[in-house]
Image (cartoon, rainbow, N blue to C red; front, side, top):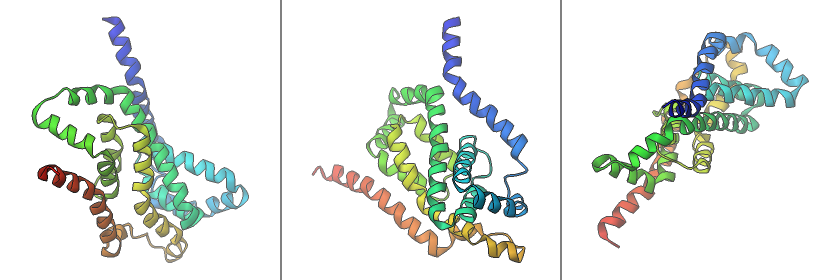
Length: 240
């Protein structure tokens, strides 16, 4: 009994560590992860970038990855900061890389702790739950890209759900990197124009992602992600 308890605790420690880190992060850095903090420290950040570009890039990626891994409420501000410091390009690449690293960290922590058990239970289930699990397994690439492309899916949910469905790490990383790129490009480009926003004393319009000019192409990408699922279903119904 004690051995089983110790085994469970060993499996849970990655997730426990992330939860503790999240609590510390909210308490310690909560006041810094907002737009006003970026506006107040913009000159210091630019000076640091100009004096130590490589170190600033590495530090930025590390901090952004930690924000995502700990599910802190500052990912949007971090993306804006990437655009503000490094322009749309290579800022978009830095943002996507950092977000993917952080998402992969929480994915691995969740999968190694409770994800494996949940995946096994789903695999051994029957009825509707089993059919849903099989449907997802048969269309993993499409489903993974879809949850990344749909703006309404919270990032933390998209990070955790694949860990409970026995998704291979390489599929998760590839779909995350390319799936978040369209949204990251939009937010990074907004960040690249923050100098003018700061000059006006205004705040950036993060609702731009939901404007027709941006949302319609994203919905088009979502349709492309769903298309293989529909074609497979149609193929199965016709018995071709």
